[in-house]
Amino acid sequence: MNVQIACKPTDSYKAERRTLIISLTFVLILMVWGLIFSELTTSNIIEVDAAAYIISGIIGLVTIFVSRLQEKPSTESHPLGYSGFIPILNMIRNLMIIEICIDAIGSSIGTIVKGPPPPEHAILFLYASVTLLFNLFCAIYTHKAATRLNSPLLKTDALEWRLDSISNISILCAFSLAFILDHTGYAAHAAYVDPVVCIFFSIYMCISPSKLFLENMQILSVGSVDKKTHSHIVRLFKKEIPMFKIHATHFTIFYVAGILWVNIEIHKHKLSDLKEEDIFEATQKCQAILNQNYPNNRLSYTYHLEA
Image (tube, rainbow, N blue to C red; front, top):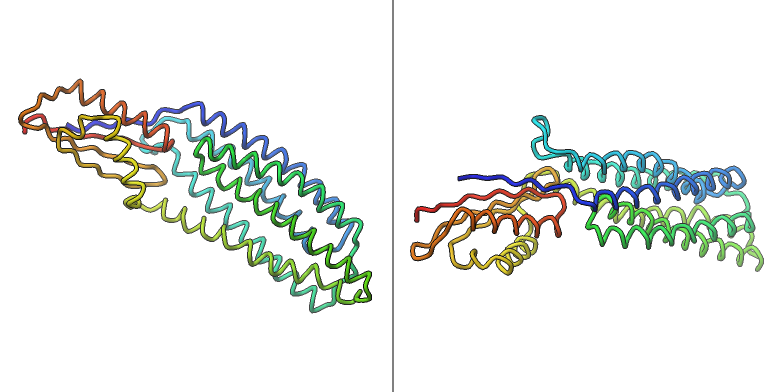
């Protein structure tokens, strides 16, 4: 007999959306902040920052919508539910980060060729200092929420805030170096600090999004999980359900469209008594374990009472 058990929506979805809404609020604040200062200065780095917040604001709205889709039940057109939209969105977000970095590199090279304008220290320090405080708060807040809720959406959101925080630290260091050069007789060199730092930092910023992009591509394909995840799930099941140690049990675990699918095949031991009620109770415990550790999941089981 084959049985499928769907993952039920939990309160974690609401907590996830609440975190995303708070994150989006800060993005919108920083977007306005960046647009104002991009008009007050000619800094390449600030222009990149402002563009990044605009894109983050748009993607943030879509992210909240996708988070709501997770709670919808399976339908004929989406038999596995709507969780498959999460890796697609994460791929888009990471691609946008990479695109911003590439555009920043091109813009900075153009500035160097044309000759950069003199740095405006007071405006730059004010912008970077205030923005850093917002970014650090959001990076810590979203990281804790992502860890607590085991949310792929929040994982990507936390990565963006972490990159923004590192960006602001780099901006402050660059502006400090430019300030020192400007006041020690090297004013001509000080103007090149902004575009040169922007190029190197943009290259660095592409590394993590590229890794996440490839990771989400793998999630979207149908394939078995890694050995570590497989062993971890089997170990959790056998620890909580002694029946799996008595009867021959085979676990098939794989990803399909971003959803963890676990199939349990149970063969009754000839000398032991095994009832359908016992199997159902065991699989309910398995479902609870999956819900706690892997929110986007599907559980099915096959059992053979005639051994």
